[in-house]
Image 1 (cartoon, rainbow, N blue to C red):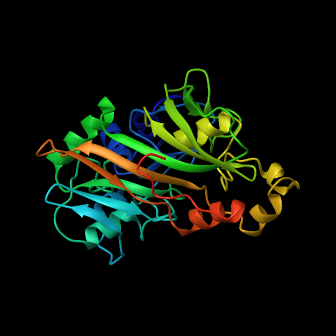
Image 2 (tube, rainbow, N blue to C red):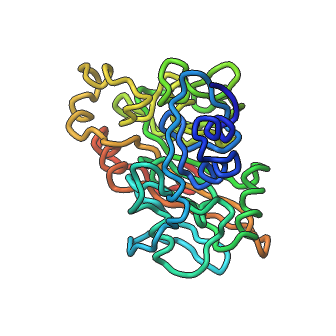
Length: 311
């Protein structure tokens, strides 16, 4: 059966109306091929659609005392340096211990614009990605920040350690991103995908790896990881998009890389720039990469990436 997610789900489960199916999806309780999707997402033949019972909608996330690295906070927003390994919001398999639970544990109000299961969440990072995120304290702030995302005036820059030495010092990676037809758990550059554009700049090369800065000009799922992999330089430690066979072959720097092999994609949301949703003031934040990122880079050539404002 093909069509909109909410229509397909309502047709498959007579106990659900289309509006109820839409509420489930907006609450993050419906996944397509393992990924939460919007009510309007297109479902095709062969897609795996899974959902939690409707009673989950009545179970709002509860506050948990989980420490967060907060760089800035006021009545409208919070800027967080998310740890790698933390899931952003509740979803099948991760009903507790998420960033949302930690936000609720800080107390106060949070925006509801993202749905019942995602209070405060303006944008997301993958579980394995570390770095800067915004959360909104109220719906007005949420809408203003989301508008900046849509207009591409909210600037997001990443640092990544990739496999191989990128020879071109800078460039633009452009290619539509959609579901990988050969592996429904992955995204890929595919015909008919959503337009995506990433600017990159080489920061440093060492021992068969490159430290690269990436600036997003769109915000697609796994965009940086997909675009770098399409360039032939997947993010180090990325088991979904990386070259596993290449990591097992001997070569330049391979002994040291294997000794401290990363257990997550070495991708870090390094810098965030936006206008304050209430005052309009320009705001800019940077967060240096975490210890595992630093250790791996240092192991390659005896140094480590610094916290430069313009790497």
